[in-house]
Structures are given as structure tokens and as C-alpha cells.
Amino acid sequence: MKIDRQKLDEIISRYEGKAGRLLGILEDAQKLDQHKYLSQEVLEYIAEKTGIPVSKIYNIITFYAFFNLTPQGDHSIIVCRGTACHTRRSKNLLDYLIRYFGFSPEELAAAEKSSLTTKDNQFTVKTVACFGQCALAPVVEIDGNIYSHMNEDKLGRIIKGILSKKAKK
Image (cartoon, rainbow, N blue to C red; front, side, top):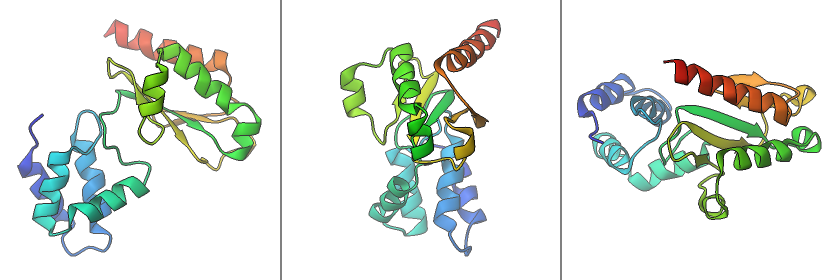
């Protein structure tokens, strides 16, 4: 995929002289991509234009969980793995998603930062250390919406709802 240098230049200039500019640049650059990730080409372009070494950019990207180095699905499902969610069986939810989408053991082993994307790029499954919604555990975020007291049946219905809406389009 070809990068849009003009839009990247606009983003970079918008953050010129601002504190924490790299985070803003990276966040906006990631939004430019259809699959919500930062390609090697984009990272090198940002490094060249800002004078920030690519190694420092990688340090930032790998520290913050909301940056992606691989293409993401059209829909995201994030399972909380914090203590409260774990004790209320969030691991079962993660296992359910792995079975539902048919991820192989090899894909699980190769998953970067606990992120798996379906072959058709429809769904990305991730984990997070904690959403801070412990009283609502187990918690799952789907496309930016928090769902509380989640179980496999509710999760399956939500996914099927997403798929049926997509089929109607």
C-alpha cells in the first residue's frame, strides 16, 4: 500500500513544536491506514521528516498497546485479562474467540503483542492488562464499546450481530 506523504506532512506540521508531538503524529498516522497500523515505510518517513531515530519511534510504539505494527481487522475485540476479569473467567472468553475464529496454535505462538487478526481482516482479537472496570468483570471492548459481565453466549451474539449487519450491506 502506498503511503500518503502529503497527509503525513500535514500531520507532522500540525504537531510541530508541541510537547509529546511524536505520540500525536503516530496516533494520527495510524488512523490514516485502512487497517489501523503503522507500516515500516510510514515509520521511516516519520523518522526522516522529524529527525527522530526509527529506534526511538519503535521504543514508543512497542511501549503503548494502542499502536499496531501489523494490519488490524475491521472490528476489534479486546479481552481484559486483569485480576478481577481473570477470576471471573476472562480466559474462557479468550479461548472462545480463538476457537470461534479458528486460530491455529501456530498463529497463537506467532501473535505479536497478543494480537490475532482473522485471515479476512474482519476481526482482530487482543488482550489488555486492565480496563479499570473491575466491578463489571469480566469486561470485553468491541469496536470501542465496553461490554460488562460478559460470557461466551453474549459474546457470540454480538459477533453474529456484527456479521449479519455486514452481510446486509
